[in-house]
Length: 107
Image (tube, rainbow, N blue to C red; front, top):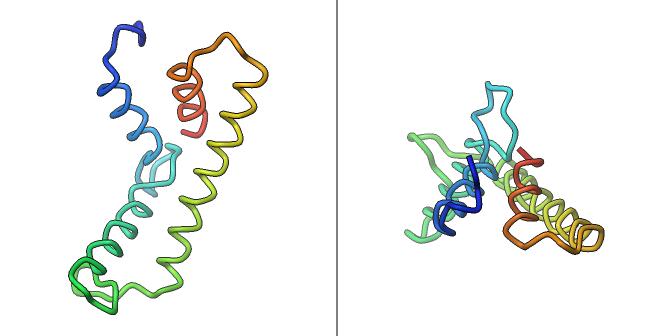
């Protein structure tokens, strides 16, 4: 499939799915769906002004929430560093190609 024929919206969706990756029991990469689930649950609990983070009638420990944010922060840091290195070493590549390569390598 020629990725240059895809619109930016479709590429953004593909890159987002590559960043999230697979579920914890699989061999796929990414930051895992459970990590994103913990972060979304944390954000939801802050929007409704709750002190604790609850999911399916269970309270998630703050340590678990901090680990989820750390995993996403490290992944974003790796993405920025890898993108910067690719921009330096491959000046002919477009931003679309660089980000697609970096996110697919993270996956």
